Length: 298
Image (cartoon, rainbow, N blue to C red; front, side, top):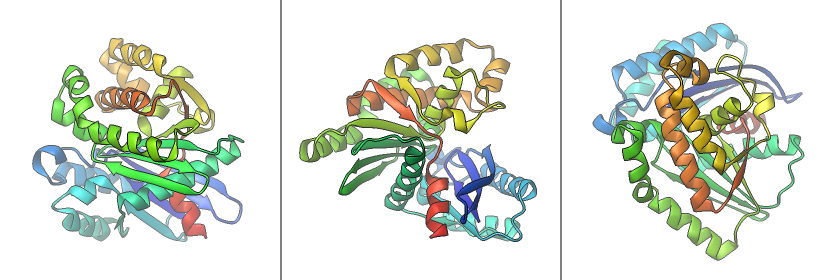
């Protein structure tokens, strides 16, 4: 089966064998779905064209014709005033029908994908918090033995980068912008107790992990990323390293058109360590796309 996650920044496609649990093929492309959303409230023409082009490219890379396809999209399309028009055009030009899922569903599927990967890593923790920093939203998912407590917040690397323009303004704005997250975390900890570990998925944590392992965007290897531990003290180091690179090298390191977004994401990520009261974090590549495949296979 084919599982497609159209996020606010990235299109991620997985070809998955339900019988064996094997990943038969993967495709990922930065499409910046939420480009301009913060300013205009709609998905722009250029973003729509990028999404359609990426889907068509994915269809060429991996044969969709004989596979069952499940496609979902998240915060950018939840917020966009022209969501219905955008999805109709995507379906008309690619044949793929996307479902706009709620923040709760996104959190549940992301947790499903993450737990599956953590089990393969033999990562044992009865309680943990999972974060997913997207292009248009960030999900905080607290996992307890008998309960999942999750909430989606409209704070993402694309919308934050485009709203506040430079890193100094972003850093100054984050305490107020992320105040609702802080209050949510405090409430969960007060009622259920602090979780034992901190886990992160999504582009920012995986990109910083790739830098730590000496990988570039072209040599990115998810199998080596899974289980990487990042200390909060390392984030400033890799942010400075990224910003010190000449533009061409920066693009090679983290991907074309991603460096400003990853820089913004690192600031959000760093603030989450503080809100969640952790010094270290386990990073995995699996998330919504993998959870979607697992559920569809059921």
